[in-house]
Length: 149
Image (tube, rainbow, N blue to C red; front, side, top):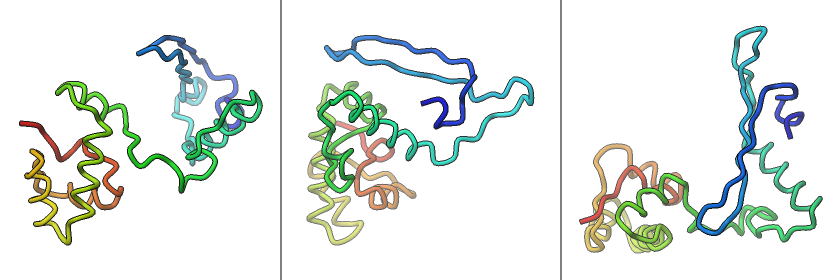
């Protein structure tokens, strides 16, 4: 992994832990070149990490998620850690929130009807560039434009 990311020889730490019944690991490498005292650039790191994930699934004969096989089949209700944390703070299910946003988007023909559909479900669209972010990311980010009542 470190070779593919251009981080061979860099200091790293691996932490294993269990969270909500799921054991997993976090691997963190330093991107600072100690001799040059500059950050190592990792271009296209998300694509590289996706490819490494695929290789690990194949190497260990694990069942690969459909979205990793074909990005068109990924779960549109997946959420980020930040979205999970927001939902957890209000004791809500992030997939339910995301589905509500997607439902609102589906029945809307513009910003006003989208905002109205959100308000009917207790959410409010923030002013500014949030609608653009929501539309551009196909409503996969709700961290900037929602709050509960």
